[in-house]
Image (tube, rainbow, N blue to C red):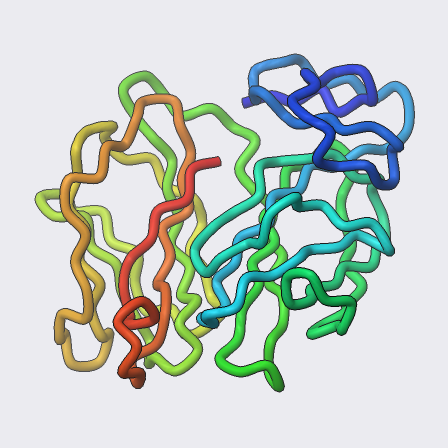
Length: 236
């Protein structure tokens, strides 16, 4: 999963991102050689893990990245941004009223995931993680677990039929990436203290050579079905 993070290294997909680079270019693979020439460039994907019925617009600086509103559980594909300090912001779709503005630091030559997190508009925030640049071994996939449920206790993720466990993560905590067998897999989310099953997700097709973040999504204390605690898989 080596990367070539230069201005000319990516295939144009659409006119979605007209921002720092003045072009609309997306990462179309993770298989090119690293090339450190040119401006320091980072890759960023954005995932909406904030349980709200409203869709969101995402900005870098004053530039809106998405064409359509980003709903709970949805993500934006990787796009280019200059490395270093940059300001990010979310607003309700179609509005200029900021919900959360924050400065983040992107590392040149690296892929990053930015999760929009929180329980209410008052505590909404961001969690920035570096993604794994190493390709999995033959017949394996890389996965990590992140607890993004703001009202859940410490959670553990189990891969049914595999001894690999992703244990004891409180809100905003995450495990390192681990290599697992690439196959159709079933996952179980448990309360770490009691062992109570909180959610399950069956028949997840883990593809060899791919990298995934598996995250605890939603709330334990809600009557809204779409926002109840569950397991979500995001492919990188």
